Amino acid sequence: MKKYKYIVVLGILIVGGIAYLTVQKTQKQVPLLPVNSPETVVIPQTEWVKVKLTSFNIEYPKNWELILPRAETDGATFLEGTYENKLYQLGIFYPIFTDYDPPGIPESLKIWVDKELSYISLERKINIKIFDIKVAGAEAKMVLNVPEGIYNDGQTRKYSDSLNHLVYVWKSVGQNPREIVLKQKEGHFNPDDAKVFLELFLSKIKS
Image 1 (cartoon, rainbow, N blue to C red):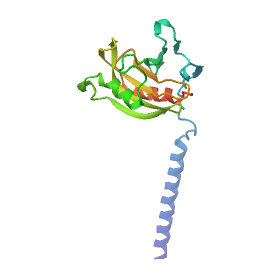
Image 2: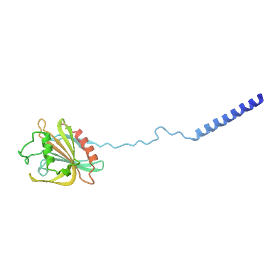
Image 3: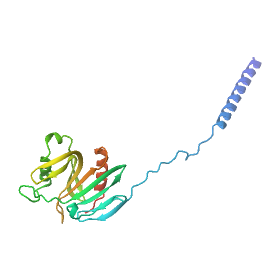
C-alpha cells in the first residue's frame, strides 16, 4: 500500500515538473513587447493669427487669405482658405438696412432676423436652424442652412440652391449690427463640418 502511494506521489511530481518546464519554455518563446510599441499618431494643429478689424478682433488660420474692406467689397472683410480639406469663404459685413420700411436699424435682433428670413419661401426654410449665442459679449443668432442670396434690388431678393451659415450680431457699445456669412466654395456643402469651423471661429472673436 505504501509502495502504491509512493508511485502515485512520484507520478504527480513528474507530471507537475513536466507542466512547469512546458510553461517556462512557452514563456521564453513569447517575446515581450516594449511598452511604447504602439505608434503615437500626431495630429497637426492649425496655427491661427490675430488681426484687429473695425468690426472685431479676430483670429483666422494662418494659411488663409485676408481681404480687407475696400470699394469692390462694399466695405466687407473676407477670409478665404482651406480647413479640414474644405475650401471656405467667410465674410464680415455691416448691414445698411436701406431696404427696410422704415429704413434704419431694426428695433431688436429678433425683428432683424425675422425680417431677413421673411424673404425666403416656406419650403426653403424647412432645414433652417436658429441658435441664440453670444459673440464677443454681444447678443447674436446663429442661423444655419440659409439659401445663398444672389440678388437684392431693395424690393426683391433671389436665392441660389447653395446653403450658407449666417450669424447676426446685434449692436453693442460703439458697434452697429454686424453679419457673418460662411460659405463653402467647392464641393458638396457639409453643414455639420461648416458649423464646427464657424463655432471655432466665433469662439476666438474678441470685442
